Image 1 (tube, rainbow, N blue to C red):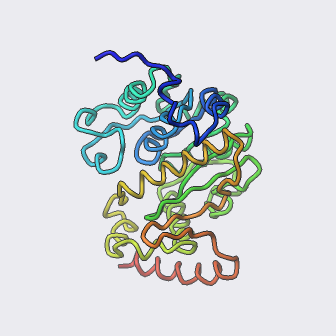
Image 2: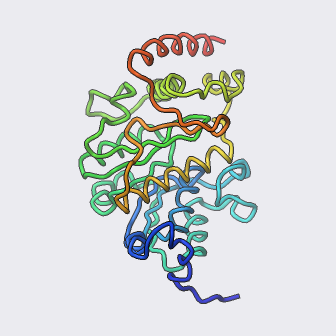
Length: 292
């Protein structure tokens, strides 16, 4: 069935949450989303349904059956399709007037061009090395990056151009060097540093099975994912992007926050003395887990 599309009809029920003028600001906006899987796909869907008029989407993976538990564009029809191809087609079915710039594996080499045109970036990928390059280029070009932690609780982080980079505050091995290339051991170190931060600054450890987490840390199991957590995270990211577009405060900051739906609480970063003490305990705990 062919249905005539009208942007005004499409977005009419947004009005009240945003004004007519703000809806036009959303239509005129553009957002770059790296990764169209779990968080990135959920964020993209909400941004496009909110009426954002232009997006760049980067992905080079393929949908698998295991993606169907949390990735909004993964279904029996799209399994085996490239995530980029399937996502672009799905977004066009939501808003046929949407301007989409599809990007494959080459996007990291195009950041100097992309970040002059897209000042809001959503990081929905789990490639540590590409993330380091993205954040460095975002600082150079004055772009803001919206991100989330590797966490069993929904979280969101907003890193503006003047803010510390994650590699700096999480003490990645690249923090004080020009070279962004990582060895396998350094990649594991980066993941460990992020997990340590998550455990220190949130109650995440109370909401996962420790034995399964041990298998994850020792490389015996893929990362856990759960639809309510992943999709909620993507929607938190979309809210931050919309706030940036509309100039609405407050934003999440460069340290971010965790939303705990199990206890209905917002968990914010701890004070430095508390974080130092807990960090020591967490490092001992993680070391014991890795030893088995």
